[in-house]
Amino acid sequence: MNTESREVAQAAAHTDSPPNRVPDRIPLPVRMLVYGVCFLSVVLGGLPWLAYRVDAYLPAWHVEIGWWRAVGVVLSLIFFVTYVWSSYLLSRRGRGAYVEFDPPKEFVASGPFRWVRNPIAGSLVGMVLGEALAFSSTGILLLFVIALPLAHCQVVFLEEPLLRKRFGQAYVDYLARVPRWLPRRRRGGSP
Image (cartoon, rainbow, N blue to C red):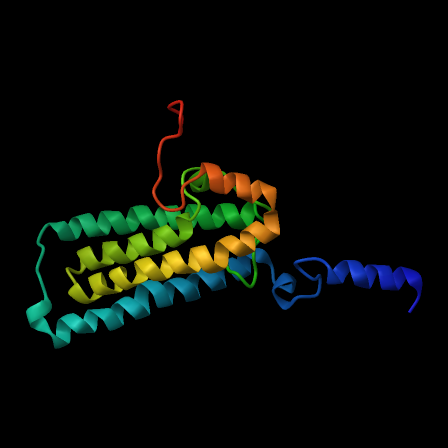
């Protein structure tokens, strides 16, 4: 192997995203569609369906909430729009997907990411809460209660350390100024 080939191989070995990875050969919009459909099918379809079985097998646990079901539908829609918007920004501006094995290549701190660090994870948990209300389901509400600490642990112990390593000081500064889950007004009155 000549010197130039060795240098190219060494440079490729030190990048976070080797050029010949399988996901990189598939266009980003296709990857995002597949990830989104598969992930949402499991998180918003399969798991809530299983959780809804609690209501069927333990009818004494079921609590009918009446018109609050409409609030659940509205919540689900708001969180779904936030999820789609955040995912779009990560794929478009971040030039990558929102999954750990196919991460964005650029740091994104705009759109919903200006207000909270984790709008995608927060939106997913929020959509589960919306489903619990919309279906008036105790089982899906229990799924929401389980999802809260799981999402928090995934973000704190997996996602944030990887992002800190990948984006360095820019991400550390972002951690200091943007809250993890609940948006707040910045000092000085601007959002």
